[in-house]
Picture 1 (cartoon, rainbow, N blue to C red):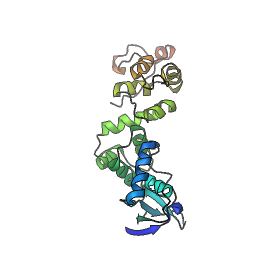
Picture 2 (cartoon, rainbow, N blue to C red):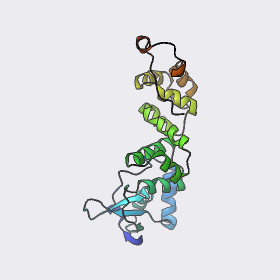
Picture 3 (cartoon, rainbow, N blue to C red):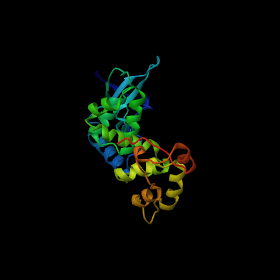
Picture 4 (cartoon, rainbow, N blue to C red):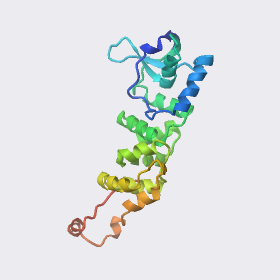
Length: 228
């Protein structure tokens, strides 16, 4: 890894970056003011463009680069690193968590990206010092209505029991309940208890069932794996 100066406008965004939720205008304004006053304190990390390109991709520090451009800086210092096998996915996640905790939705997206790259839940847990149970909980978000995810990304999250109930319902069922309980300007907080209650279903263990598959099908009974 070595230090060099580059035009921030020449750097390319990493499509696999972990923090996808937009930062607040206040946070951006504070970072911009800091850069104007003292410059970039911690240089962004970049890697050579893959596939034979001659440019550089931002691996960590997208906001710093963006605000440096807004501040009118013609050159900034960056750290150049070798491209990792996972395109910097784990480095990006760790760097973001250390700087400012990712919201649960971005954290889930990052975990899914690592899983797609061949990381196991256990390996992710060891690398990030997270219990595997927490990783499994976050992965429930894969089954949540996108409109709910967008709201959760703002920091308004259901508790674990409510999340499990929501994730166990179909997208169509979630959509219908969300229409009734989605936030409004007058009440921006979601009553997740009401959302989960609207999706609650009677559950039992398969070992306790006293009916056959034909009867279960007739009454619309479905068996699902309990991750916990």
